[in-house]
Length: 112
Length: 113
Image (cartoon, rainbow over all chains, first blue to last red; front, side, top):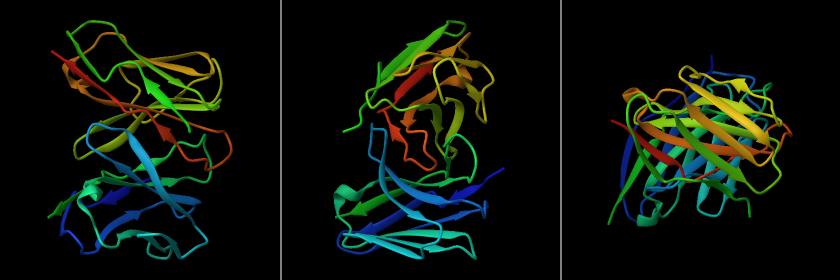
């Protein structure tokens, strides 16, 4: 089945850039997503990228997709303490009723 | 704005009890999902539904059942709660079009003692 992997923890200093990485196995994935989970809350869609794109930028967020290596990354510029959260990578298989396959989540801690 | 509402934020139940977790969405979404979230394991799909009265097993359906009598409501049922079902449960919904994003509720943290 599909496998989505992320490292569990990342710490950065406030003002630095954060890069959260994700690898996936399903080469037929059509969309790849980044979700953010703040403490005590559900998951909030941050951004997504279609599989025929290499990069997508949205304000402080940059998503890079290397389809050959099945590697996805999320870069957060000028990281703020409010960015501290768990970030989930998810892939959407080509078929199926829209269920997503999620990674384990990366807990980002921003140090003031 | 899409709203997915889970009826309880925290629940404490005893082993062997029957437990109902309720989820309601207000965006007329066709698809609804139940996930559980455990540290180091991410989100795992329990069941999903793509229409009223329809249900499909996800990756970990054992010990759970679901009910979708109305489009806006999707219930997760633990027939006989066990301690290994202590977890955070997340409900989500989406339109039926391929790759429509999922919208999540705030979660129900269930503790089974």
